[in-house]
Figure 1 (tube, rainbow, N blue to C red):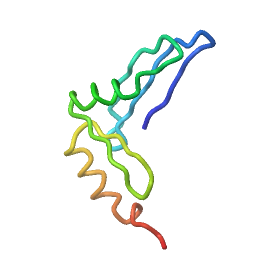
Figure 2 (spheres, one colour; figure 1 turned 45 degrees about the horizontal axis):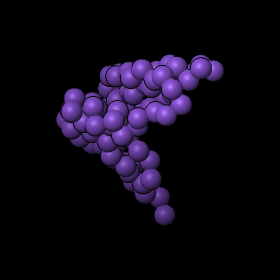
Figure 3 (cartoon, rainbow, N blue to C red; figure 1 turned 135 degrees about the vertical axis):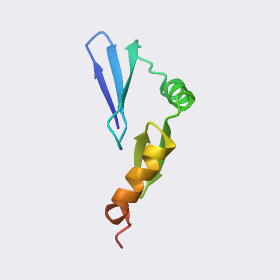
Figure 4 (cartoon, one colour; figure 1 turned 135 degrees about the horizontal axis):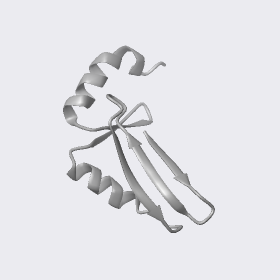
Length: 81
């Protein structure tokens, strides 16, 4: 999960929270252009994983955390037709 907190001068923080365990990682923002891809790369280097299920994107602090979450939530995540 990603949230963005900025003020009128385009300074603030991008907050990432693991959808499995709620572990957090923050990145400072200063300026109108936010380096989303750079943040993604830094998260990946820290072991974070992003996956999309049924059109919804999820962020996890590790592959093990993702697997636990998907196993627990498999009934909720199944596509309804």
